[in-house]
Image (cartoon, rainbow, N blue to C red; front, side, top):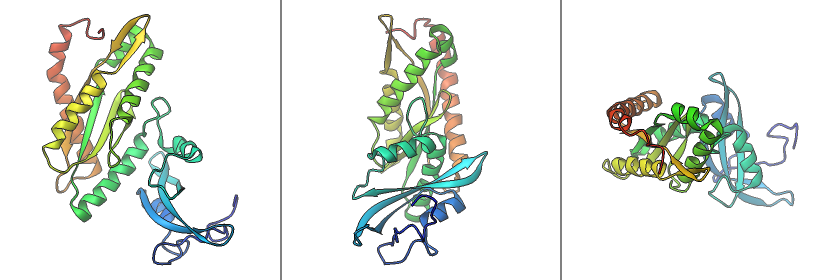
Length: 260
């Protein structure tokens, strides 16, 4: 299949209505056109000639805020996209943070657009959480960047174990994390924020026999009519900043805040 276009690849994949996806309804081409994450159940032709059901996931590949390509991932008979080794490799290149192995900003932005599409079409509520590790620069200066990276890695491992299939948590950049959570009711957002804070606070790194920990300031907001990806991220970021400002005075009085 290397070097071939879609129609000459031999896949001949069709959707549930029998439409050929290479002719006008290709999810990969649509994703490359508008930058939106997509998933669909399709049927491809096996080399022996019969049809097999596949889950298709498409992701945009961007550079300097421009779409330069796309990734299409086929998974047989499974809703889990990341189980296969090849899928892990491809997704890791385009959609995962190299330090924490969490979804990166590109993946989060695509998933957020997908959540907005669900909200507009079906009214499905979701919340966006913005978190910042408190005084992480000082922690790095005190213990070194290698230890700081270990903290980020352990936080990533903790967060991956705590999310549901309809949620996504990733590294936005530096010491910032973003979570996107499906909600059944507005009040659930407070529980989500508390859980996130506790997951970070209860994650530690052992360094020379000493258990080191950090804390996170968190802001969370629920989608509103008229929101865009930019406005909901900005609102969550501002709420996080407000909470961080309120917490700074309390933390400054405890110079041993990093130690358990």
